[in-house]
Length: 89
Length: 152
Image (tube, rainbow over all chains, first blue to last red):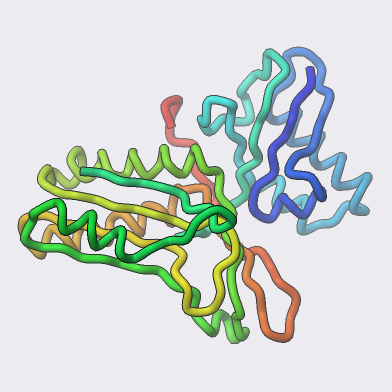
């Protein structure tokens, strides 16, 4: 499955684009996606600890703009947003 | 009455007068307009500006939920609420957010305004990258959004 991961806040530092793309196996979960992002950090940013902490403390949101848990099963190609800890207002 | 909008500063400006006009049209007797602006010093660093980022659809969704909770949780039915938040770069002293509230009495106006800003900080997906006079810019640390239920 092709997942387009939209980047927000500090996670924008992961790429010059607004998103990252991942290929996941069928029936993958958000937990699997989180691990893929950490692998990406290891490979592209020498395992930058701050980036990995950011991924671990982030939540994710679906195309339907719902916050989704680590158990959420991804069943099709889709856009998912990574939501780092917030601090606006 | 309810108005909520993300102001993309690449396309438009945030305008205090819009909030004033909205409040004036509501005909309530008590009103408050809160503005959040970029402050000069944060954690002993001299700030020159902030770049705001947001997940626009989720932010608007959270604003609507917060508005609905004023009736459901605070039991305050008569009110007019205006919320605008910027996206993009704002300089020192410039406005990042406007919350305008009108209702029949002053106590409720203060309660509603306070409730809105505190809830936005807890749950609206908005991020700040602070820019400093002599230091590298940095994204401010925030709070993780809690997973409440299936309907969030």
